[in-house]
Image 1 (cartoon, one colour):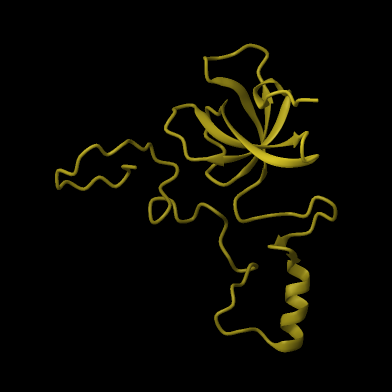
Image 2: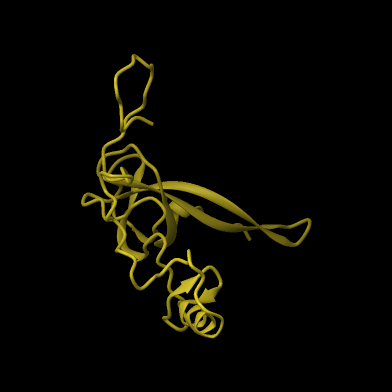
Length: 159
């Protein structure tokens, strides 16, 4: 049985990727497709645009998007419902605890108490919230454009 395409599904979970469209964000949707010959599932990625007028999602966020009752444009068929996981701040869906890679932050703190904290270790409790580097090192909130030629002028937001 073939899966319906991502554009036809009511709600989807996707990762936000960089986009040049105004008022919309681009998402990478992972689908598992069955190969009948091997009887195995293989991942297949689809890209789609969702209406995001407030630009609440940034590159790397895991977002829940839902289908619009009527298409806005030829490309925009969904809208952003909510940001599930901001980039870099993952939460275990079963326990609700914060995680780093595959380990709970609580476990990392307990290990650090026993063995001592490494001098250059990252401290999650003292870390500022995401977005504090806007206009310093993070330019994802700025409008980008394609740089067609290098004329010697400074073009900080060119792709």
